[in-house]
Image 1 (spheres, rainbow over the protein chains, first blue to last red):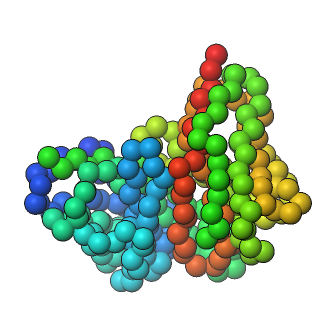
Image 2 (tube, helix red, strand yellow):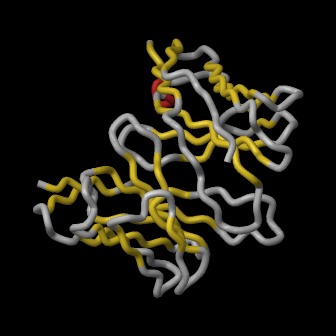
Length: 116
Length: 112
């Protein structure tokens, strides 16, 4: 089955530790995204990547880092510099749209990170 | 991206039509209206999008006013599984990756 997987579903870490969230897609999509969602709020963009080995900061990139070494993978590291890391993290992907009228984003199931 | 305004919450009886409004008075000519929904603790799911014509798919219908300053998402026969937060988003219909700006959405509660 094609789709986006995020693991784990729940993650607990101690304050001051870096943690890496996994995101994998087998949809052959060029673009991938990371969003953060806090309770009762909409999604906010952290980072996105249009192609391998390239990525751009979103609205709230401070305290986060990403890599895009492979097309199907876009891991997100939450560093100790992120002041309020406890949140629901969502990964998404979308196909390259040149010649296509629009680019629907497909979302993974999310990872709920709790920093103790 | 243009800002959108949606009611915080709505209720709908199962089997009835759910009409979810969205105001986007500052929308520009090249911006489309997208609707996503998010069921509790899951990733958002695309529903429908449109530019100026009304659109319909297997999930919903989208009615956009002639001046494009507002739109309504219609779920024709709401079921309990349609209980979710519905997000109205406007953004350019570009050929490259671009972010979706999510507001707080409308929490739709479908009841028996």
